[in-house]
Amino acid sequence: MSTGGRTLTRTAVPKARGGAVQSVRDSLVVAQRNLIRMARIPEVVIFGLVQPIMFVVLFSYVFGGSIAVGGSTDPATYREFLMAGIFAQTVTFATAGAGAGIADDMHKGLIDRFRSLPMARGAVLTGRTLADLVQTALTLVVLAIVAVIVGWRIHNGIGQALAGFALLLLLGYAFSWIGALIGLSVRTPEAATSGGLIWLFPLTFISNAFVPADNMPTVLRHIAEWNPFSATVQAARQLFGNLPAGYPVPAAWPMQHPVWASLLWSVLIIAAFRTLSVRKYRSATG
Image (tube, rainbow, N blue to C red; front, top):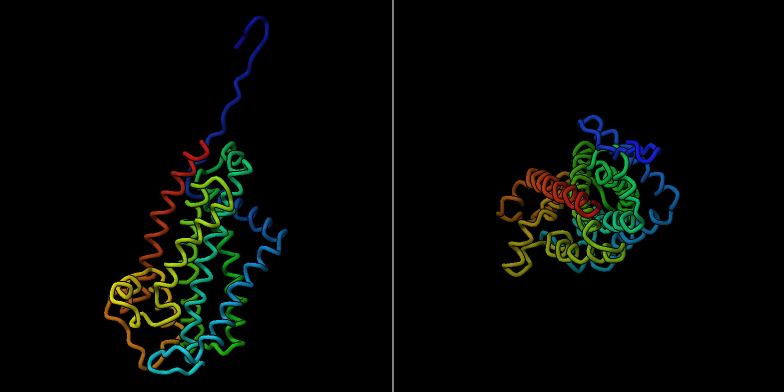
C-alpha cells in the first residue's frame, strides 16, 4: 500500500501449523527445550528427589510395625504395602512443579513469544508435560533403588513390575494436565505451587496409599475406594505382588479391577484437562 510516496508493508501474523505429525514435532521441540532447561538447573531435580526419599525412610521406619496390614504388623510387610503409595504420591506431587513452571513461563511472557511462532497451539503445553514426565520417570528410578535398599521387593516378575510403573507414570502425566490448567489460571508461580498442592493432600491421604481403606469411616472409605489415586496404587500393588496375604480387597469395582480402573481414570483425566488447558491457553494469552 502506498501513502504519500511511502510504501507500507503489512506484517503477516504467523498461523499455527496443522496436522498431527506437525503437532507431534512441535511438542517434541518444546519438550527438548524444557529438558535442556532442567539439565541446566540440576538443583530442581535434586530437591525433587529429597522429599520422596524422606517419605520412604520416615514411613518405613516410623510407621512400620505400628500399622496392621492383612492382620500383620511385620515392618517388612508394611514396607512392601507402602511403596506403591509412595511411588504414586511422588508422580502426583510433580503436578505442582508442572503448574509452577507454566505459570513462570506465563509471568515472563515466554508463552506469548511461543504464540507468535507458526506452531501447533497445544504443542507448548504437551511439550511441557512430556518433559515433566521424563523428569518424573528419572525420579521413580532413583526412588525404586532406595526402596530396594530399605527392603522392598517385586514378586510377579519384571514384566508386570514395568506395567505397574507404566500405570504410575500415566497417572502422573494425567495429573500434570491438571497442573497445567492451574498454572494457566493463576498470576504467579507461587500461587501455582500452592494451588497445585492444596488439593493433592486430601486426594493422596483419603486413599489406600498409606493405610488400608477398610479402617476409615464409612464415607471416607467409599471416597477412597473410588479415588483414581487409590485405583492406581491398588493396581501397582497387584502388579508388583505387594498385596499381603489376608489383605481384604474391597468390593468396589475399582478395587476389584484396579488395572482397568487406573487406565480408565487416567485417560478420562487427560482427555478432560488437556481440552480445558488448551482452551485456557488460547484465552489466557490471547
